[in-house]
Length: 423
Image (cartoon, rainbow, N blue to C red; front, top):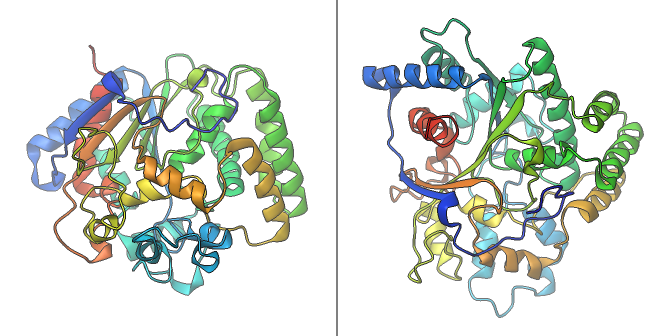
């Protein structure tokens, strides 16, 4: 993608990423039973601190109760009702695996649906219901704090953030504004400046929120940023969201003069993020995309997922090829906003950030099988979560593995090597 991307959609290139791409086998380690692993984490913490990392943000949503595949929009576009799937073998079965009513993923208790509040009660509920499956638990955060900060005079702040999980353009844009406000909070609270770094690790569609943040952080003012912020300001006034309106008022001038981070750098790692929005790297430090991936292709293009029907419907229930949510929650899919005002604003945001629409366009994007965005480093990692189990809770179609407690050492090691180790 070009510098000053101005919210262009990723080009979804099927070309070999070449030197941008690494392939890894995840080493799963239970830190509580591994003194050597604890020592390694402490050494990694020292390396992170020495290279300026002051804050680590663990940003996530909920797999449960959020239409994680975005099938509401596909059905709204017609889907089976209008016969779009006729003549495409296996598509009916694939949509059944993706729909909330038949994908085996439970709703959240009490009828809780997005927008999810970023509060302690909701985080505890997710920990109880879903554990560490696609969820940075309180236990994960505490373990990271303890293991990285052992022996450090200036501890690294580890923060858990739950985004609203509104899986549509408007929801992600609102979350991006909220994230800019939170970034400014941390800069001020921890007195960050030149030489300091904030490292955000974003799971799933939280990565798309950071992609929008990267476009908003563009060092050069552009009309798309103003238009997007104006749309969100108007919507916030319509639906009584003073938090969004006040955040826009606070951050807009800081974005314009490039001072929102006060000279600190923002580094981003995404885990299992669908390839959709383009990234603007002009306002970022470092960028890495990690995807749970096992090669099933026979054409030598090992960097692509395998999207063939009807075979995919046999692979998905055991997460044979890796992360199927990353593969399928692409352009054209989404949850549907619940009010007419939200639908209208969502459409306006849509026109800025994503040109793709229609059931056939979704199928086209899914069949492109792109794992790694056009910007940033990429890592295809086998998280070894395909055990033959057809119990969705064991793997959530390959999307759960990244946040497991036993992957913390592997993730931290690979991130540190990619971003902060001396070459």
